[in-house]
Amino acid sequence: MNIGFDLDEVIGKTAHMAVNHLNDVFDTNYTIDVFKNFYFHENVFSDDETEQKAIVETLEWAVFDAKMMDSVQPYEDAVKVINDLKHQGHKIYIITKRHKELTASTIKWLKRHKIKHTKLICTDLKEKSYFASQLRLDCFVDDLEENLLDMYKAQTRWRKGLLLMTRPWNEGHYIDTSKMSRANNWIDIRKYLSLGNRLK
Image 1 (cartoon, rainbow, N blue to C red):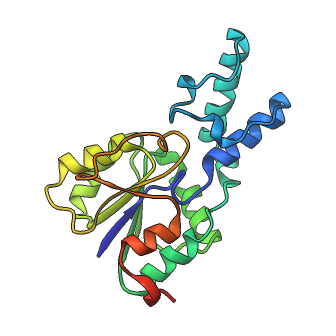
Image 2 (image 1 turned 180 degrees about the horizontal axis):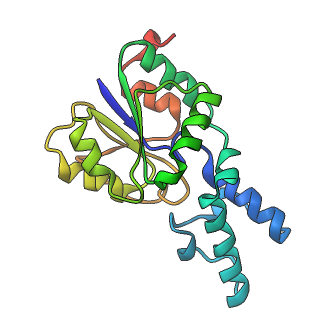
């Protein structure tokens, strides 16, 4: 199968990195549960307009800074499940909207964490659906519903379907189960792909 994964907040704990940086800068104690919306500027961190703006700018700086992104850690079981899939002969495509300038550092990050993959695609903020369609993916996992809906429209047949990884910014949302399913963690992904105990 051709299996696609988003990188940030599916494989890598990017929001954790960002919120830890925020806590360091502002001496706060936020967790990623503060992100009720995927987009930083649509979350409320402070009643003070100046502080709110400063917090959003700090978060946005963190996720576009190569050194900060390099400190992101993988989610539990992500490396094992991906590597087992690759070992079984599946093609693993990692498609992220990261800027192309981060391609080299992202490849180094994947190598450092020993994440085996067929190809990394940094779309430079372009829609992922185009690349997913070109690669004829059988499945894609993302944490943002709008990305999966774009993919659903771009490709008429998904052999294994589309998976929404549950995160604070989508956990309370109703999803159209005729278009996508949910995964709460990487064990759910493994079960969804019907690989069971064949994973080594």
